[in-house]
Each structure stands twice: as structure tokens, then as C-alpha cells.
Image (cartoon, rainbow, N blue to C red; front, top):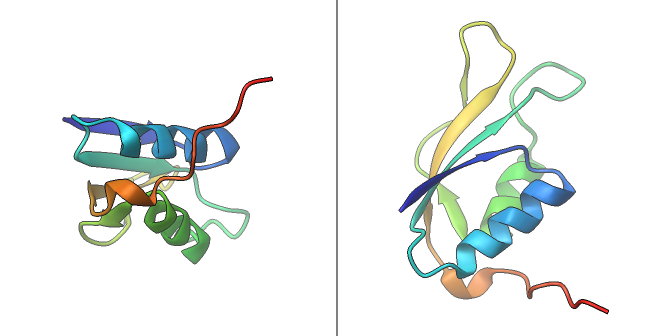
Length: 88
């Protein structure tokens, strides 16, 4: 199953980790807004995706209007997901 993920902040990172553990999810399409510099997403985003078990399938592509960047990803390591949060 291919899922779209918008944003990679605290909540987006959490969702990427949850999706890694889902047995039917094998691909993501990640969309983010440009950082304060307005350019290509930071390498921290790639690192976060790798930590959650996903790898990019190409380069980040800007939208024609420059308001967002998108990249397709595939699941490379289901065991890489961070552990689920513990509820109190």
C-alpha cells in the first residue's frame, strides 16, 4: 500500500514510524514545505526517513509554484521504526 505523508515534524515523524510498523505499507510519498531558506529540504529529513525505515526513490522535486517539495519513498527496513510511544 502507498501512503501520502504531509510534513515531517514531530507528528509527521511519528506517523512515519507508525506506517513502518504497518504490514501493508510498503511506500510513502512525502510532501514538505520549504524551510526558511526556501530551498531543497534539509538532509535531516532524509535522516528521519531512514531512521523510520524508508529510503527515497529519487530526488526531492519542487512543485511548480515552489510551495512544497515531494519525493516517493519505499520501505527498506521495517525493523528500523522507533518504538511506539508509551501511554501513561
